[in-house]
Amino acid sequence: MKTIVKFNEQELAADMTNPIDISIPTNTEDSAVAWFVSKMNISPVINDRFIGSVKDGGDVNFRNIFFNPHGNCTHTESVGHISEKVYSVNNVLEKNHFIAQLITVNPVLLIDDLSEWEKKGDYQITKAQLEGEILNGVEALIIRTLPNEQKQTKDYNNTNWPYLSKSAAKYIRNLGIKHLLIDLPSVDREQDGGALVSHRAFWNYPQEIDLKRTITELISVGDLINDGLFLLNLSVANIVNDASPSRPILYKLSK
Image 1 (tube, rainbow, N blue to C red):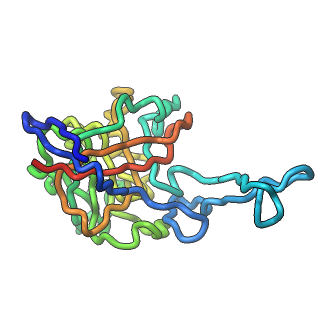
Image 2: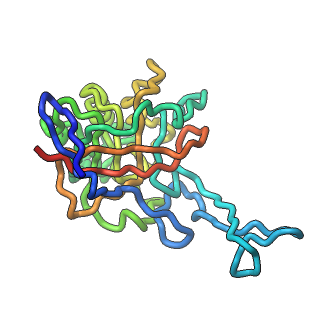
Image 3: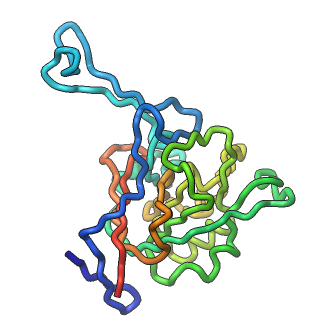
């Protein structure tokens, strides 16, 4: 089954029979983790009247799940992530399908300190790497970083992962991109003293309270998926919070 969408006065067909899941599976053992949170915990409800485990004699499995969306799973966040007021992400998306472009970037090694938070030895995604690569009119940008390995099971704590430069984040915003997805725990440096410059640049915060844009982090895009245009389905769990677990799904677009 194919769905026809219009993009820049062209009609493109989305192959709805071949969904590509770019979220990471989250479990209690070997899934990706960041921000020094504990692994996700799943445990049965057990009290003097009820056993929430069939294995242990209960009628049904009835488990509590404890996790942090920022550190345990693929998640989508609103500007409420960095604002004093919590603008819940579950109210941000007015639709769930977007024209998206996947690009692959090999972050650049910084050979000098550039600022208080941009240090020699860091790897950074720069504006120069993005210029001329992003098509006009796309609503969502998906960034796959190299090397593309162990993204689904990596322990990111104390790894100083690559991050977006402030100018790159501002450039993405100025192109009109509404939804930014990246295969790292954050668009910002792991330790930046709370500057969060790329989050702020993408949302133009605090100059604006921009509820139309989202950032999705901790995705994983397989090596066999080629760069190009996709129809993105972006849905979040209906949780009232600045961030919520999400499961972005791609459908390849072709003429």
